[in-house]
Amino acid sequence: MSFLKHKIYAALIIAAVVAIGITGGTAWSKYQIGKLEQAVEAAKIEADKIKQSAVKLEHKTAEYLQKIAYLEKHLTEIQEIAGKQDEELEKISRETNNSRNGVRHARTVRAIQSTAAELCSKLAQIGHACD
Image (tube, rainbow, N blue to C red):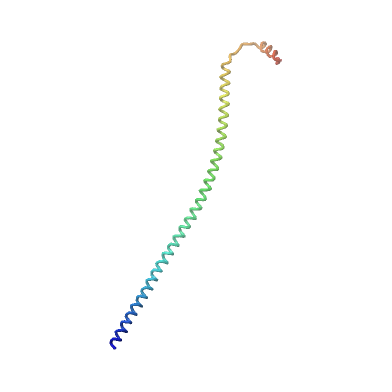
């Protein structure tokens, strides 16, 4: 019987080792699953933070785009005004140059001494008599 007892003890020891292994493996799996679940929760929290940050950045981007559009419109208006002012300055410059040329021309013309009677007779000859 002693041999049979040894076999039973050996079988019990093997069963105990297997049971301890299964229990240990289950505990280890639960521990690992718990760690992974915590990591998943932490990742979800971080993802929510990143999402909120992205939404804020999208709002700021939209604001900046509106500001850019406004400034571009304002710049276009300023450029149109500047173009009109340039045209006006060119016109004034032309008129000033024409006036200067007229003054120069007037300075080069010699004055002819004549009396009022002589002028009236010359005007009468061309059909514009003095009254």
